[in-house]
Amino acid sequence: MARFLFVVPPLVGHVNPAAGVAAELTARGHEVAWAGHDELLWHLVGPDALVFACAVPPAPERPAGLKGPAALRFLWQDFLVPLADAMAPGVGAALDAFEPHVVVADQQALAGGLLAEARGLPWVTSATTSAELADPLAGMPKVADWVTGLLADLRGRIAGGRGSADPRFSPHGVLAFTTRELLGAVTLPPRVRLIGPALGSRPSTTDFPWEWLDPLRPTVLVSLGTANTEAGAGFLTAAAAAFAGTSTRAVVVDPGGVLDAVPPNVLVCPRVPQLPLLSRVDAVLCHAGHNTVCEALWHGLPLVVAPIRDDQPIVAAQVVAAGAGVRLRFGRADADRIAATVEEVLTEPSYRRAAETVAASFHAAGGGAAAAGHLEQLALESLAHLGP
Image 1 (spheres, rainbow, N blue to C red):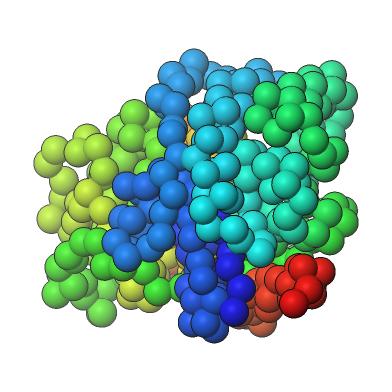
Image 2: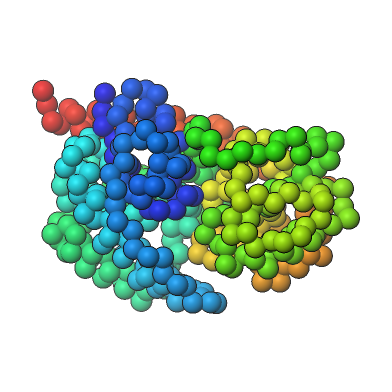
């Protein structure tokens, strides 16, 4: 039996894939602990999880219209680096108390990789979005040099300057929750393992009126994730209006309560049990968040994607290139455009066929079981190194 510590940022889409891997390790008899936002982790992975609380800085206010280098600078300077500084004491405490044999560090939880390397522990990167695998800094050498400097300064502050590896790409391996069928023909960094989605069982966190669904009428899930409430009010309003007068039903996830009156064939919920619901719907309209896209494609569902920011344009482009969906411009997606694209993916069979092709690759890749196998091998090497 080995001990595995998962270090994750306070982001649902980054915790859920890791939770699938952790559940597989636990089922195989290993010990698992977490370092991150304690309330979020207990909500997502269950109240009995062993969680080492890490401080989380206030969410930065993102200026409107950020794109290109400015958006990357904001991500690093205002989110990733402050998060690493805040999490470092909690991660260090977890390493001291839990004494893991292997650390699994999310790409956006930089403190995990930096502190694991500084202590000589084997660690694996959890790449819950494929954006970094496609190297978003390619063609921007000045920004790349600036990021390198930020990482060097961060390593000096929280890890005593020890180590040299890029915390986004562990030399011990990178678990990427995708496959070539979605990722495309990009050149991957060394030791990347394409394992597909890791969809373990999740604690039930909400009730859902399953009787509202009608198996004789198509249903579309509409979701902009958990971090886009302010940006998404207009889009969700247009999406709800798009289904007026149609035979299609829609389940709209509205965590911020921005919707008022909606057509009778639209169900508004603050949250939904997404994985069980995906097995009961016919298509997904979303922001192209990697987690939502992969969960939809796992179920062979065609997509309408309207990316907002960050990695979402990259993921949306992958969906379109795979033939599994249609892209909308988020800022110009009125009710008519949304209605037309939803109708297109529901009625043109090529989108579902392409989604099913990606789904087959996901299932074949192994998901949580494949990831657990890689981590077990690394743990065995670690234990052998420690000796009797």
